[in-house]
Length: 115
Image 1 (cartoon, rainbow, N blue to C red):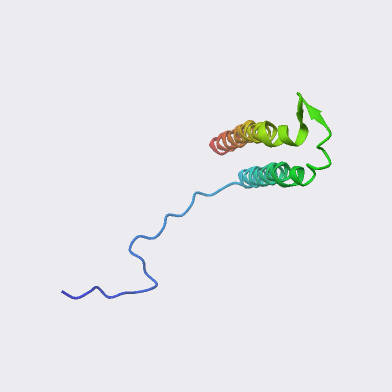
Image 2: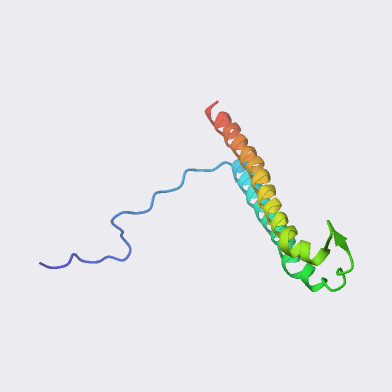
């Protein structure tokens, strides 16, 4: 049994063409992803500061007390974890809001195309 001739230009199952996207939807997607990247960069910068900058300044903060503990101990033991959880909650809330805006843009675009 011989192998079928291979033609590099012809594919058996070509990938489907994506549906056409209106300019309004393209702008909505661009705003969505630009916001997403900005949000991730901002939250990661805050996480970096909590993880690396605060411990570097710990010796300067050793005289400050919070709830009876020295501030560097509190930040390392509980504060950093609480900040990380807050960052996760902020990301979830803001991305749900962005998802709703994108969904509204999609519905408005679908209604405009349908009429």
